[in-house]
Length: 485
Image 1 (cartoon, rainbow, N blue to C red):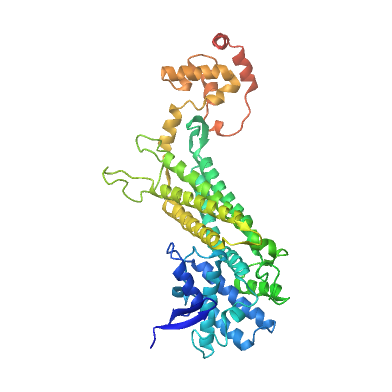
Image 2 (image 1 turned 45 degrees about the vertical axis):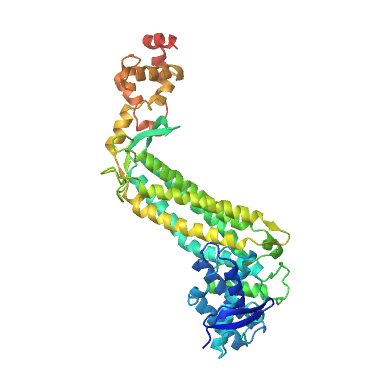
């Protein structure tokens, strides 16, 4: 038995493995594009199969395809969707523009399998052909962008829960740490007192806000141009193909796709993918910021802040015994940088539209879906292997707070900015606490000073004691010290 079969296309004869469900177009594409070894993700393959199935049902309903032929295509498409032919859908993601190889690879597999179901043989394309049956009413130019949308919206159902769970995990830590007062820092310098809980509340909010941005951006992907065929004009498609196709797609996916009023625009304008990718970039920004903060807050344990302890996941050094690094947080930052790179690629590809078509959809697809997969896994790793196990070092937070001069801002309403600044410098020079320095000046009673310098009080808005301010201003010792400024 021959190990190959001969197929003909407009360029001539092609040898195709006899066992293969793919055909001549796929062989040519595979020979041309041996670039990265990276193939399309499962979500995209499934989305292509869903489109082919919906098209068969639509063309059946419109009497463009017989019920018998449509049934065979539907059955073949189902097998394609379920991964039966994944080993035959292995084209490189870097390929001919507009994803025509992807589209034809799917058309060939489904056509050959449909013919087999009908009693025919692979490679004969009878009675089902790739172009006039499986691809009827479609073009790579509307199929691939629609498949990207469907794949991204399906993958969103996996990504969003992980983002939201991470936000919830950070919120739980915010509640756990709500009473731990610590130094707040700006410019990496002591600033004013805050609570560790509020710090984690901010982290939770930033991740939750990113989830909202993602929801809003990805909702725009529900508008599809399927049925617009080559340039958005709908050439070769039935007048009712477009709305019926969208109805079948929604029934098959559970999505809420809508048919665009401007299919020609969506053939060339891929801004919606940039919008979606940018929202993922915003999440990456938040994850990088949080992971960086964790590294700083965890620094030490003796020579750094040591305000929190991250879970110990692995030894930190090949040479330094006992050293443990913030490995999970470091990994999160690396992923964040990759998301930024993917986003730049997508935005560059989106800009590369010429006349009626943007042909960069394969690279847009790969980077968008890869970013979603990376973020889904990273959010889960960050939550389960880091955030959930964070321990607050209450004593270290208190020790650093006691040594700090960050309570000085609380004195400013009572002593004035200039006097307070001079007292801070004096405390630093004498290596005293701020309380010790101010107490020695006898500007007020000790209980009054303790009340002003209550760290917990200074973590929230509060009214100043105007009567006390008036007494301090008339204090002889204060008036003498004031002259120094």
